[in-house]
Image 1 (cartoon, one colour):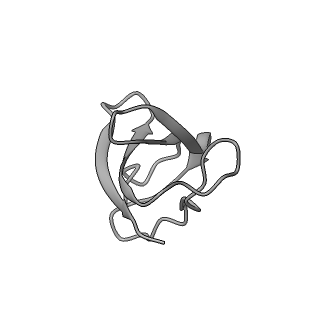
Image 2 (spheres, helix red, strand yellow):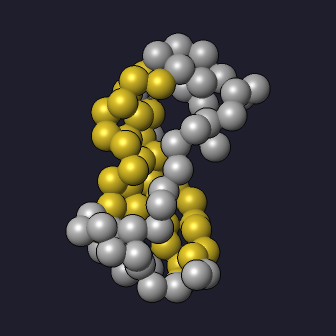
Length: 79
């Protein structure tokens, strides 16, 4: 989850593998308006940029909201 503080900001979410190699972009410069009480609707389908399912493992996401510092987190993929 992320917040834009209740104002409309452009949001980009990217997925990286354990070596921080680029895997996929979930959304790019999409206008979003979320506050802390909202539930975000953006999700990753577990596929890479070529449309292939990624192998099981740990992946990282990077959320960029406007000009703020990016936020990073981890995702565990088990299929």
